[in-house]
Structures are given as structure tokens and as C-alpha cells.
Length: 209
Image (cartoon, rainbow, N blue to C red):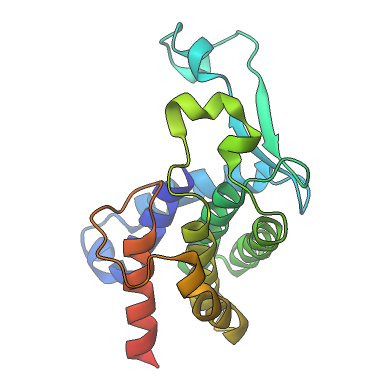
């Protein structure tokens, strides 16, 4: 979900004029805000983020609209003792990217998103670990195969783009070799593997500088 919002926001940032010309700008904002409102609500403490609602095995027995579901559904969270740097990092990236989108039309909301993005990045970086190691229920459906290093770099570069602060760029540069992916020939860009996107963001940053 967070990766989808990051992609929507990235498209809105880089192709704003085209989206507006097609008469879809308002729809783009609505789609992004639907996700970011949820992320903000799920981030109940600087070091607590509610990662999943429902259990895949149980939910697949009941195919219906979420609005019609009345069964009890378990909620799972990541925290200091049960880290999820990949999830925290991707959500930070989504919120940072979205903060750029809303900067002019809703500066207060933009600031709120950026605040949560910075906290989530700090959370993911300070308490490192993959979310599927903390929440076993996600492994059958959304296992973090690539680990969390790509999401931390991804979040740092989006925070740099959103804030212009050199500390985030320096984080990405200093950790690029040890976290991997920078010089690799990447064949996939997905919710799990962010290295291709990292290379694009890094290239854009170098061109602008």
C-alpha cells in the first residue's frame, strides 16, 4: 500500500502538468490522500506503526467488501521490540513524496505528512529489522525478500527531495555501498525491491546538483 502511494505521488510530482491537463489532478490528490490519511492514523507513536489489519489465511476464507465485513480481525504492529525497517522506510518515502504533492494546495497537511515521514525514518533506522521477522503472519503473502536496506535508502532520498536537507543525501551516499544495489543491474522494481527507483532518484539528484 505504501509503495503504491509513493508511486502515485512520484507521478503527480513529475507529471503534474500532464495530469492537470487531462483533468485528473483532483482525482490524483484524492487517491494519494486516501492512503496518507491511513498511514498517519496507523502511526500512533514515533516508534509504533500498525502494519497489518487482518490475517491472510483467515481473510481468504471470506471474499467480500471490507465495508461489509463484521468478523473480528487481528491488527499487528511494529515497534522498538518488533522492528520493521522495510515497512517504516517505505511508509516514510510515501509520506515524504506526498508532502511535496500537497505543499502548495495544503501546506498544513504537507507539514503533517513530512513530520510523520521523518519520525518513521528515524524509527526504521534506529531499530532495524525486517517486518516479516516481527510479524510471522505476513510471510505467506508479503515476505520481505530483499530485506530493509533498500527501503531505508529510498526513504532517505525522498526525504532529501522533500526537505533539501543534506543529512538525508549524506545518509544515502554513506550507506550506498554497504546497503547494496547502487551499482547493480536491476531487473525488478516492485513493492519489495526499490533499488531501480533508488538509482533514478540518485541520478536526478546528481543532475540537479
